[in-house]
Image 1: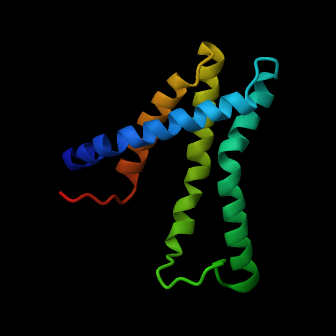
Image 2 (image 1 turned 90 degrees about the horizontal axis):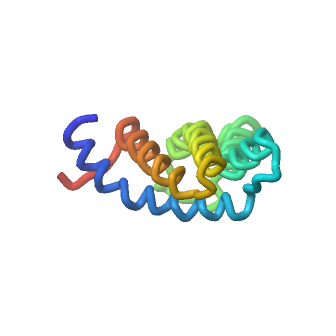
Image 3 (image 1 turned 135 degrees about the horizontal axis):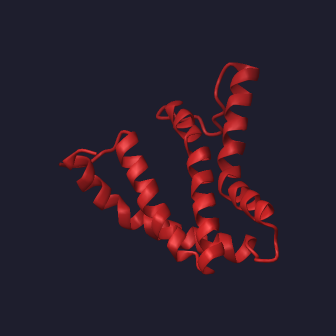
Length: 136
């Protein structure tokens, strides 16, 4: 990560970590129980975090395969098909977040350690691996 990217990392770190603090708290309150088997718990949490992106990708690429065009419910000249390509990376990324969050939740009984790790990991990944915009 370059020095400029590190500054961008610091800008994004708090909002991303706050998002994961809320999202993982809701995830564990609604889907996690110590009574569930380890495999079922991991699979449930992975699906809870990734299923929306999977549906989006199936819809987009299914429509592309059938019609030759991406699905766009609201015709927008600013729609960039690259958004669909960018969405692909979030399936494995959020699956990794689900594994980390579930592992830490099983060890601590709290969603906060997983949220802190996920905030750091996802912010680092997004800043270091994708194009970012910064005013400096």
